[in-house]
Image 1 (tube, rainbow, N blue to C red):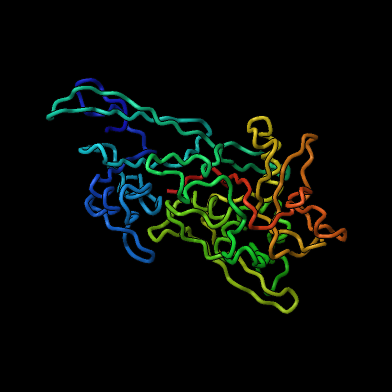
Image 2: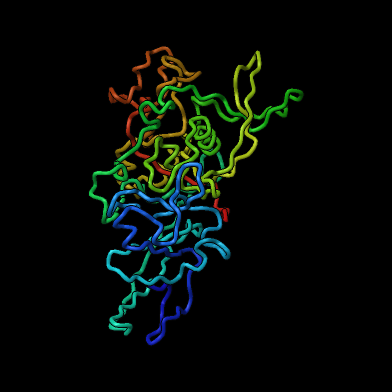
Length: 381
């Protein structure tokens, strides 16, 4: 198998795309749920291994890298030379590692397959691998963010998966039941804090009214929920983790972000953001609404389904504060308006309750649809 178009009579590609690489896992490893026969070490939490060993024979995901790490495909990276593999057994497995497409246009790569018997070529064919681009969403409050075209949790087609594993799911909760985040108050977040100068106190939106600050709150909630580490075989524990796992990781499987906790008499407990190197996020309410409106006719699901936002729910029966067990989902209506998702504001917490069919004020454990967004098109290598 060779990446790129290969002229007849040769085994050298004319050109090789920089954004895609391959890696072979031996059939013996697939048969045993190991990775050592392929020359790799098994990943363990807190350990130094790089590849996922399932421990069971012929299991989907065995031999996959634990993380898509920074620099993986670049010169000097672990897969920089992964442009050609030799498959010696029909049960060998080849994983393709594909970089994110930030070009706002579809792209494709050709894989040339050369079949041999007793060392002599008997035929060859090509396979084209396509990758769609991100969709720009122009925000009503200014700026542009970028949305994935496909909800990848709906499209898991590993031939070894018998559709009985955690890789298959039709939606995700804002927070998995008993994960802690399903009953947790999200503290306010500040972009910058100063004990001296008021003008150096720059808050993000309140946790119960996250309209445009989905990006900072996604990384922060991942931090507060202790969901920083997720391998490429894990099922996300939250809508946040699904979006956040689009980010490239360091060798420890972490996306760098740091926070400091403050506790002030007049303000209570809140956090200040010191760094956030993530790019992918769960959108705020208005961010999701603007996407639903702009691509209403493009995606049928945008005309009928609820989508999670990064906002916790407002306080029960209120319009400020925060519910510990609810979050805000949104959906666009045929008349162009959006469903309500507030806390009721004096009319009762059931006013916009999702489970009663009245709106997007939903229990965090409800399984709803998700779209991941990218904050910009800057490359992360």
